[in-house]
Length: 115
Length: 108
Image (tube, rainbow over all chains, first blue to last red; front, side, top):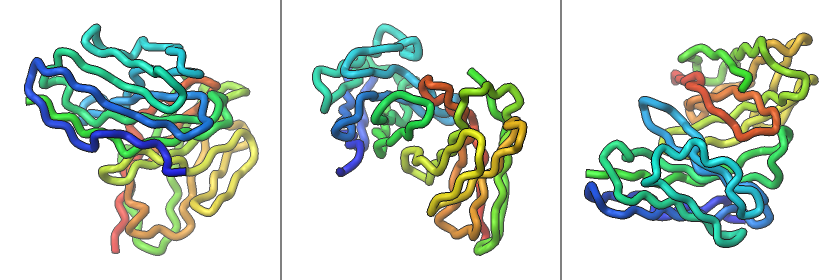
């Protein structure tokens, strides 16, 4: 398996523009997670899905952020409109089942810069 | 969420063993102890995890105190490629919550 695949690897956009980040989890994994990493706040969980259904989105910072998982092999994280403070590395991760004894597999991340 | 305490940074010489400590005095009976690491410009990667007994894999060893209030990640022979931030996380069947971790520097 190629692992968790994220695209794009880098995104530079201007304030006010819509940004869409994409993630393909590992085939057969039931759980998908979106994290954001900044120097100030470290790694923060934004939202996670189980079998394509959002379970907890309490980490989503504002209504400008939305995430979808239309099928088991694809998820998007959208920011509309984007702001400079959204600049961060966004990671997607998946796991086979959401149990304490399971591993999380991370993608390489999307480096987002909002000018 | 149960919390962990780790030193902010540690330094090691290349080819020497490294012991990375983690305190988790409020751990519950069902919490697994997970270790992840994040190499520069990469996503976190799984290192090892355990519940009560010590664990070994090709990357590292995990030593868990008898009362489970602390654990130690052991890299048997540090290499330059082991320079990373190491996160100790308690997993009680909820999404992983990452702290600040320990930044390990390896000196040639």
